[in-house]
Image (cartoon, rainbow, N blue to C red; front, side, top):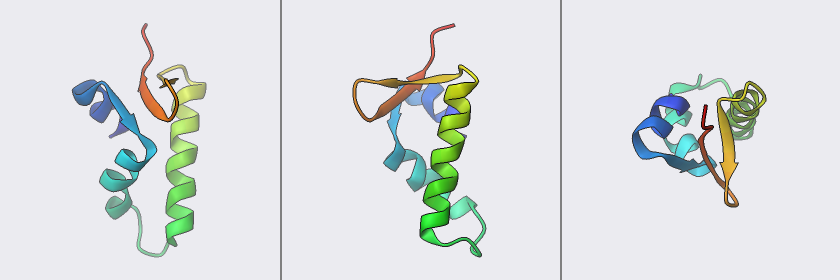
Length: 64
């Protein structure tokens, strides 16, 4: 979802991703757990070289 979002809009903030993904996560998770889950997914995508931080708090697809 995050990669699809960045493909379409070029950049996005964590708040953007939280808004589109939060409702898709299980209700059993608290808001803090959902926030952590999204943060972990962003970090994993960054570690895999798919995305990078773009000027402050926004993310973008990494140029490959």
